[in-house]
Image (cartoon, rainbow, N blue to C red; front, side):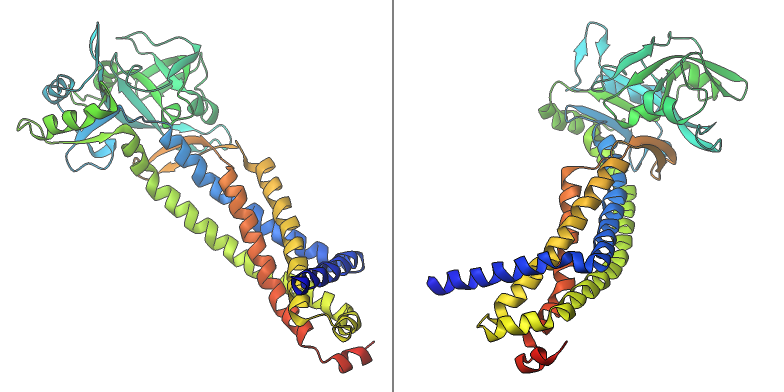
Length: 399
């Protein structure tokens, strides 16, 4: 027990002297901290894009709501359903009802071009034709400004994300497609979900504008409960009059987010890894400088009986401490710069823009600090081993 306490005491003493000598090496130390902070900032910043996009998609659906597409479709853009199909779907067992009838909305999904507010360049914006139950089959959707459009009229409401990102979508503005113009009469929110990136109007009006007859692309339905999904799905897939794909809304949007989140995550980790290599060399330089400046001190400690293991651990702790300072600085900078930063990107599943907010989550902050710690440990290992292996007599003759 005494030996163990003595070993920890040695580590503490060496670490204390090392940290006290930092002012003499402030240039190299500062460069290392800045390098590690840069790695963490970039890593957390890029991954916050994927986290924000994923959150926008996940917030769009719930377990007790379903979406029905044509069989084989991986998005609404390539789906197609007729009026008879949508009636059969609305009447299926498991669909919730109110005084107005089944809570199912047959919907039409088209892409229009609108200029971005920030750049003025055109972007693909989703425009959705909905039916009366549309607000009941989605969670937390409410009119935040203006009013709901009137059924049968060329009027539109827009999601808050779309109003923020694209020109002309404020209340009082208008959406012009070909010869048709839809005045914007309201702005709605949907708990940050993907619906906030869309423009909504009456499905019948949109069908007429695009000469779609009575064709739709999807049916959104509210179920009696999450447990009713299996009954609903089995009834539709077993119906010989239908050829459909049935998904929970939550699962559908999770699938929609998979491609872009995987791409962003891969790129973010790759960029951070390349930057981390540079940061490791910075940490190596700093710690080698520390060892070189303290050669006689380390040799004296060895001569006084300090063990090699204690020296290695102490120098590793010093390197780790510097890395954690850089990691904390980088994490804080990423949170200040990126959290809740609003942007829009392409959803490659539907080829339309999705407005969302970057999300710097606690998990990402922890991940960034872990990266910093690894950089510090790797950067401190070789200098620590070198210090511990120095011949005592030769080191005492230096300087």
